[in-house]
Image (cartoon, rainbow, N blue to C red):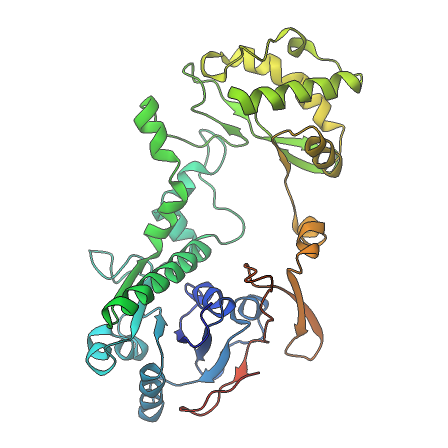
Length: 377
């Protein structure tokens, strides 16, 4: 899809995913790293696979000139400038635009290039807090929590890749490049796009609810979303409407066929039932037998039977579940390539299949050819 597009990736952790996405889509991505950078780290290898490596010391004049030559030969520059650093000067759009008028410069920073926080630095935990995500993560009334694996970098990298592609499309029509100013804080906020609806519709600001969902009933009742099962957790919630009615009816039928105690479920007319007006006491009575039933089944059993019965819900996959997922295997998602020590390691493949094919990966850290030459591996 992006064959013939050259990308110069001068990012740190905040921007690695953006270059990986563009590389997976067929762009020729050159990754810039400082001499002595840790290229063995598993996270670096995962997010910089499919890129060609060039080592540059931005403090050296000769390397700065080589960077300019690489930028002039590129269509897109991805940068995560730190104020005052030599890299920030070299990646400055005002300096590059007169020299490379067709270059799209995607500048990725924690808080954007304008405003009182434009010079601030931040890690994932600060960005998740500043973007509001932590206000919704954790148990009600208790300390806000950060998702265990970093999320801010992923949201930011995805938004940066989108910005690069939109600017590239604009260049095709206008003939000129432009700067894309990506704020990681703003990228995290997009993950909360569901929250404003609660304010508009119900006049409520969503808060931490743990394993539950609020805002579904005018009484303030909360509904369980994550349920313990025999070998992990299941994502399931009582719905209303046509889809919910089907799921609720099938769950009760499954429980009845299994000999499970139905309790309050036995007397509900799902044709008329709606979550919008139920009280917390009613929800608790309904959910109690469901909790007992789900606690005794496994994730795979829920997936297979739920699919057979056309129910809404899904097992919560852990790393082992994802690695052994039959759907991903059938689509050829995983790709094995040689690691830095020569041993074969498994990587996530390109997220898209184009014209029936998934592009093959190249190992990250492949040395770049001299400027002006293209090295294919």
